[in-house]
Length: 74
Image 1: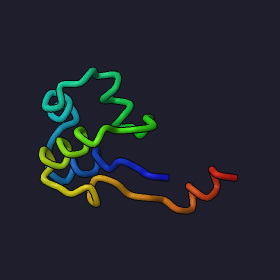
Image 2: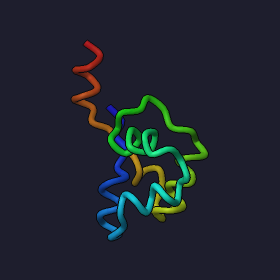
Image 3: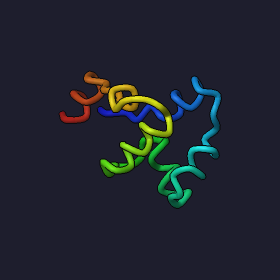
């Protein structure tokens, strides 16, 4: 399962979830679903913006839990 690591990156940088929400300019409901990993897709443009704001790469932004991915496919 692919996981978005936004909250962890924000914590490391001493930034708040509210700060990122204001920077992205999206609805709070969609933003909250995204950072809580409750969404099925994220636009490439949003990934690019997140990387710019958090000064990271997509490799930093995402992680994969292969064990959870295997068990959910059964």
